[in-house]
Image 1 (cartoon, each protein chain N blue to C red):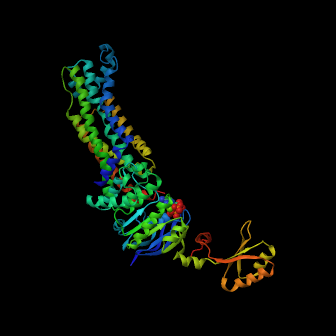
Image 2 (cartoon, rainbow over the protein chains, first blue to last red):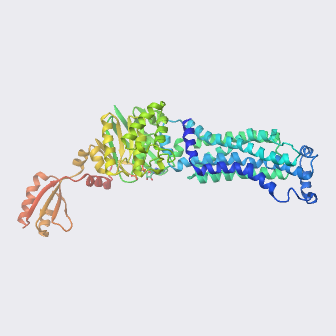
Image 3 (spheres, rainbow over the protein chains, first blue to last red):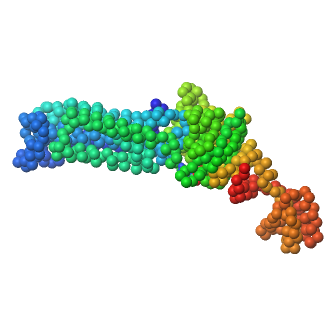
Length: 269
Length: 314
Ligand SMILES: Nc1ncnc2c1ncn2[C@@H]1O[C@H](COP(=O)(O)OP(=O)(O)OP(=O)(O)O)[C@@H](O)[C@H]1O
Ligand SMILES: [Mg+2]
């Protein structure tokens, strides 16, 4: 795992990478929930003004309605926010962390022209590819888990206060989200980045284009959840995991072939 | 056995033929220079031989291995210093060499340490071993990238413009290093724009232009075959009558007078027989001769002639 080791040292010394790796998880798992609950009024709004939200809630599936039956509307709102609405936002962590690292490791190495001497060594294509995928994958899984711990802590802090000592996390959906869907979507992001990296010159373009492809999909998920079309439950998370795995398989096979030695080097001048 | 043998090696980039049916051989232990103008295809040739590119057609054998079929084996036994220093700027000098030593299969860390120490010592970089390469000067990077190319003690070494960016002293060190390698039986192929380097180092040179081979051979051979000696006469005073008289000889190929001086340079086919005749005629036409000497054309003259002629030899 020579490549992994080398890339890892490089990443550790690159604040352009470190900054987003630390900032994104912090934003999603601490700032976002804190921000939502510090919007003045949400917690102290008169019940009548929450009527609109009540109709929105009526659109929610039966099982969620059952979960919040005992609560008053404010409590229900917080519960649903923490439990469901913020869940897809959470996927930004594995997507962005792996995107930032992979674009530096694949496109960045090309941009800095170090790829030429690297490819002159007898390191096999597969070892090279695997090392570079792992160096993006491992930190993004770690970042996801750390974010989850942070988020659980923050979410429970609110729920203990507002829901009479009830701890809302962890639950099955979130565990599946963190340990199945997040790693899978990290790989999707890496696969996309590898393919994009083969086509563009700089690591910034690689980063932006691949994020530009995957983010709208995530936004769709966020919206469809707010509209009540899809609700992230264990089944949905598993279904997403399985379908993304299939997409990953395709992306990574295309990635491997676009990462051939000749492919990269014939583009170097 | 030949260290390198190529047969009609060709590389096309789209419509551009960067290397055009190049055939040559390099013997084991030889220092072989590739010369040619910018864009001639030197770097591309070296990349092909180091298996960084695969040929469009033709073939080559490096250290007994085919560059297409056995590319991994070729990679193991060759070292290449590329045109760009190609070092990891965020890693230290030591970390760079350590990474490449391991990538080339030196798994024992004690052994790696010793190799790296020796190399960095040799290049005077040991004191900077823990400094990040990003902070190195161009010359330091160049040295480190040569150290990187030989970290695994390869049998065949490719150097793409090894002395570019180096001060005269460092350039000298590199040249001495190349010579000592060749004495150890290692084969060195290098490209350069510094003709003097080629003159001092090479057993043989190949000149290429637009991807084609235009000359190949020992330098003295190239010099005597392509160049005519020059008869240089210094006159006390320049006189057009003298010049016209010289031009009358049909063996005289070319007469040039250096600006604002009275030195006449005459390119001849055969110095031996015609020189006395010319001098006689100069004197008869009233020329006062201060000195006469015969000089060979410089490598630069020959090089420029070959490259400008662009004639492909067979
Ligand atoms: N990856 C590539 N894609 C397209 N064309 C290329 C590529 N690499 C080189 N070329 C072209 O091939 C030709 C030969 O280039 P090469 O780099 O081998 O020249 P060179 O002799 O090393 O020149 P220099 O003295 O400037 O280093 C040039 O016309 C160059 O533009
Ligand atoms: Mg070149």
